[in-house]
Image (cartoon, rainbow, N blue to C red; front, side, top):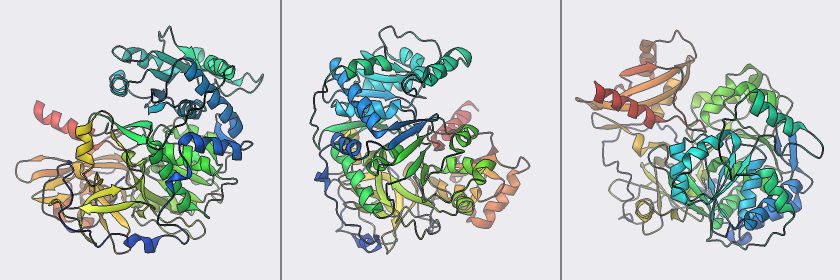
Length: 595
């Protein structure tokens, strides 16, 4: 997640993503200055030993909140008690087919009841969860299965054909298949079976596939119910997740997130929000996929610690369908990314909702644009609260203070470092930056990953000998300890020897009322090195390139003003709505090569 910053131009310098060795200068004057900005009662450190494993945390939540509703999906409810029973049954089934502690279990599911059942079942069996994007192509899926060495996968039947095509050359031997309606029925309620029939035979959205040895999830649970679960004692340093990252910038790598990493992040968030969210009656809207680290930690785990209720959205891009699902729902919190907030705000029904119950709107994954934040505040009365995180950090690194009784306006800051977290900014010469100086954000804390799976060379590039993880994001810390990100090092545009940050350009253009979405990239230029090109999805089809450039001239220094403007019907995005600048750059390079 990146934030724009109105910083003076900086001369071009080395933008390598390789982490240099330990900084050559002593500790900077930024160390610890953020503690004075902590909300009252928030400790500087957390006790990571409170839970030994995610499984222990899960069992405690089930015991505390057994009668409460944990998840809502397609009009049905799943209580904590039912979730615990189903997860234990799935864990027992995994053990019955030979899944050993430490063995990788892939989960390829959207936001349905099956996801938390499979997730916590795999954890209780001692497995290592490999989260898989259901929208992956066969090539992408094959890479992840081969790289992780997964032998077991749980897959939604809509994507079973992709799995069939990806299986050759992998170690997968156990396949569990499920349909949308499988866990919706209670007792004799035929709703689930009817829904599966309609999707398969009426709407025909389940492609034909051949997985002769696949086991239906309902059968797996039936087997598990009849067996006893053998307790598995996971420890802090045991890997809980292989969470793949880097797919938007290169070949995906598996971040090894341990039980300690995840537990630390849970506790960091818990003490940060203590006294703000009661837990009793809290309902969170969950449009982001639970297999993504942001939603996984915040929605599936942190809100579980509050005994909260999750409203699952399987396809957030179908905004009309989302509005139907939440029409009669009152939620106290929601998590989304900038593009999703923008899409919701363009919907008449969303804007007309009663938001009196909303306490907290959280953003992550990408920069939240000022224009979107301002529209959201005008519609809901609440600001968008930003934090910052990465897959490699489980993901939370920094957070803005939470005060649901006195919400403040969006400030564009990603907050201050979480408890037990150290943040510094490394300059290109290897020295640490001081207050107001830009540098690459580096993190040290209990939430930082163990390393990249089977990639010691990539781990060494990312984590220096002193334990500092280099994020690849450039930022600045102010005198209060608040962090403002400028941009990704890899996305920086070099114009006539000066660094130009896409986020700043995008934020300016997004403020134009006729712009729906925008992305900025650098394209090669023989005179300037690079020039700025922007891709725009128009809200008003009458918008012209000349109007865009004129708007930029009023708000940007000359060398930052785009030289090229291209209008499109849509922009390439990741599964969570992050705009893929890399895909746009690759298109431009391909055009130049073919010219």
